[in-house]
Length: 164
Image 1 (cartoon, helix red, strand yellow):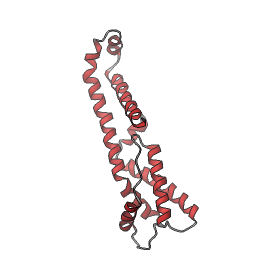
Image 2 (cartoon, rainbow, N blue to C red; image 1 turned 135 degrees about the vertical axis):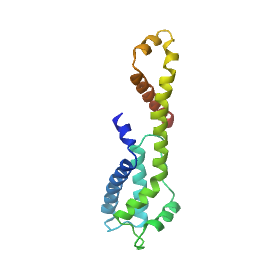
Image 3 (cartoon, rainbow, N blue to C red; image 1 turned 120 degrees about the vertical axis):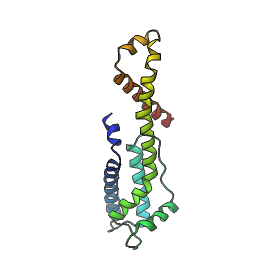
Image 4 (tube, rainbow, N blue to C red; image 1 turned 180 degrees about the vertical axis):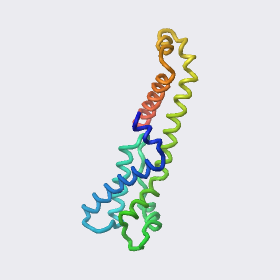
């Protein structure tokens, strides 16, 4: 639950995560290609690696990497010194632009799960108290614990839906 709460910290958390991922990927690709900066081919490999990391670390569905045409489009706005290659800071700016929609989608899903699920849980707790067998357990649970259980169940169902 702590990791989920960290993700709600907003822009600062997002920027730290992007910086961490971009630095690792930039160094990895740069070391493989043995060049000072990233060429288009290196950059596209780096984009694939970044989206692979995003898909590993963020909750929710799998996010497809952008097309090569989309990458070429964004390079034009990020290649500040117009040398046809991307340095570390340009790469960070590039990845920020590439991942804006991804983080926006994840944020919306987290808000739905972490705000709507507990609210619904507390609202429906009274209705479940009357269910034979199950009702006594529900009556004994504090609202906060019941809401947490329902929220975790909602997150689990979301993950199961995305995996299938």
